[in-house]
Image 1 (cartoon, rainbow, N blue to C red):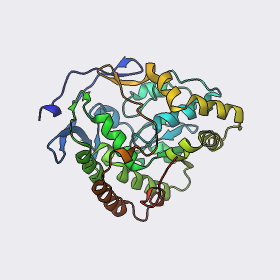
Image 2: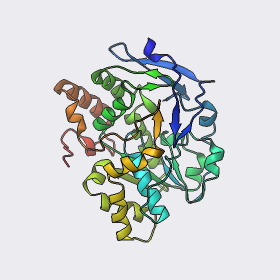
Image 3: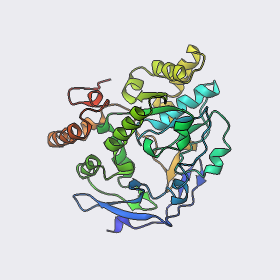
Length: 317
């Protein structure tokens, strides 16, 4: 379909235009039930956005980590940019906006990442099983963000819907996109596979220090969340700083402050949307909710994450 064709669109990060190169990619069209398509490329069995170059993905496993690196591999739309901002401010020791977008490992040339001063936050959306070998060898700290998958589905849909990417435009309905989301034929093979993969990794490597950052808990008590991050990082607790960071990172302030450094497509900022909990209630019809929980129960049963987002839980903030 026309919407899946490659288009001339400028993709920028922190104001810098990216060289979009599809060479060497195994491009596939994922078609929803309404006949609308999204283009991904398959690398080692995982679906990625075509803006991620094969030549970068090929070197992730061998990327040279440092012992004081913080590895940050959350699934897209789970609050990764928000949490990055908090962590970077804590490491810098001041509540000042970080004047750049977070350096995504599968997007940024690794020689640029190698020049970043320590301690680095190594950002990615890749599955834990695909992390650099050094994460395990050096026992790097890991921060893993989680969020109600229903809200993630809505946020990921809005990321794609009616927006022209270099790989095309997706104009499908949410209920059709939700079907792709539930079966895992979306970014990084879907959130359920991403979570189960992380769970297995952390079980297999109990020596790895990991902190789970809950989107809902952070919305509910941002100061406490910043304090918990500070403690996990092993920093001397400064409650005044934690409160200042929580205030600086409130969604409305951060959205405005980060706009000059955001990711744009065709000149449009799209990284920050609503920053709320429970927006899924505006999108899910009763049958869609039943279908979702049937899949959730099947794919997440026995998971450490299951009870957090089970049907019986209502994250009203």
